[in-house]
Length: 338
Length: 271
Image (cartoon, rainbow over all chains, first blue to last red; front, side, top):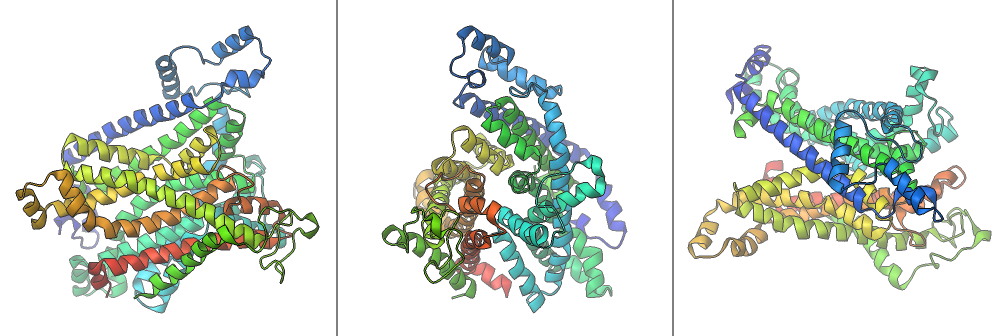
């Protein structure tokens, strides 16, 4: 049992925050180096996959009857000439400075296209994350506090089912019930944020619920098992021994300590939500990043595909980096380990 | 025997059986179009109804089970075939640069949003069952590598491994003869879970049109067809949906049951 984990009331929070930061700095540096390495390797992988993809964007755009000179001119204009290394460096250099290239088909900067779509995908993923947390926390806490009883079994059964339901199928069922039969929501499309915050949120409600459900089921299970682990710890017995009721001990000491693994899972879920939103956007015809990827793939607009995928991977790697840091800040044992 | 294991085995057994039977018999030919008979709700002739081309849905579900199971099975095979040796190797060379390289590589694959890359692979190299298998399989590799290495590391500290080393066995032989049999239980449990995730992933990919291509029936594709017709023929969406849910639920229950059965420590801890 680590000393800093023994927390009595409010003093515990200050004690964990005051742990000497030399180790934390070393840990942060180490994680940062591996973050940069991950990004470099990830970008190389994505670049290579796009490189070996069959089909030349220039000849795709001009059709089979194009003159060789026109083709060469277009290739030069699109930045398809030059060695692989130069093009890779140009792409990476551009991304770092905020220049994501120009779309082959729309002739607009990729960054602008991404920006528009991000205003759909990001609120959707955030709303889903919020919903899944709001569902999972009470469910997990309830199940842990009723361990082995009917309530626990009920929640666990529901989460088993939740994990097994494909979110796009659940989305279709939501459309069938709430859009087609009850007419409370529209079956798809997005009105745009300029119609007001409420209208925008209204359009994203069903997609967010569909996206949140399987994640909530996973999160509730993690919350429950993490709480059960903590409930068996010595400091929980101490808390009970000093006269706290079961409920007080749970809220003051149990929850805070149980949250650590739960936070990690929430961080990891970010990537599932991003990926999930790609499919859910198809169900609801939402103009988000997922639709952009599919449209670009079918138009062989590879620069858009390349940059959007890199952006998604970047946000996931970044998120995991932040979760690692948050984790180390809360749990000093981790810093010492590496 | 525990209840989870039996329920799970029965549920997933039904779909494996349906897939196997479909090789020799289906109620109707799954690809025969019969427009006059389209969008019929479940009836005596067509137990699960017909789709927008008048095809028998039960027959399509049976043949579709083949696709789902085959894709998920091979994907788990790829994950195990590559991941387990990597994990064993990393554990045998624990603390060296090789271990570090393998594990950092794993972290990297882990960091990719798997579905995004699956979409990338299938979209660029062409949609189809084979590319779907590869895409799903790649993401099974780090799962198995990590779990194998973790379990193997603690085994390397045990006396019977020390005895084997004293007897002059090489690290490779120890890994194969002593470590692997001892992590097999863990791998079976994880395999079941990855299998169910593979079924979900295949359904997702074929729903967006990147999985098995028509005329090969697949559950995800059936759902995509059902989407615009969901208000007039809800059975078209309900049937494949329930097929996916029951299969995944069955596999997950089986995984839970196997874990309880194969890991006696957990059994004690749960009581």
